[in-house]
Length: 192
Image 1 (spheres, rainbow, N blue to C red):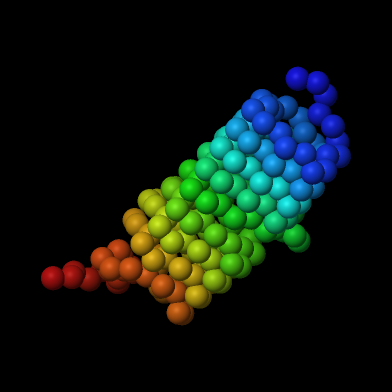
Image 2: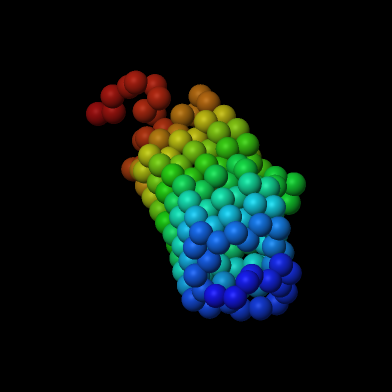
């Protein structure tokens, strides 16, 4: 693959292997990435504005100082991503039908973000603003929510969540039965 351009606008990139490449300080605006491999890629201080990623692999990507602004992830595999290291000023990302595993979203403002239809496993949300977030039809096995604002969040049809209402704000959040019974786990009671 030739050297990576530092500033790209309005392009579609298909089936590129960026794995383990250094894409530090690159800027992408209005780009679409289809079936690309970003595993273990260094995206330190790079910018992705109004970009879409479809069927991409982001396993162990390095996100230190990376700006993700108005970014869409569709059917992507994202493992071990430390989103909390991203530039928090403009962070705006949505995920649809993605596999997210071992990701950390702590201390992020993700108001109105969407994870619709994704598998969000063994991930962390600590001190995360998730007001109005869409977790509908999401598998949340092993995912931790601590000291999060989940007011007006939508967990309808979500499964395997373990949310402690004593350590998270859940006013007007939407939950579905029978999974909503999981909200009582923190109280050490038995449902008959």
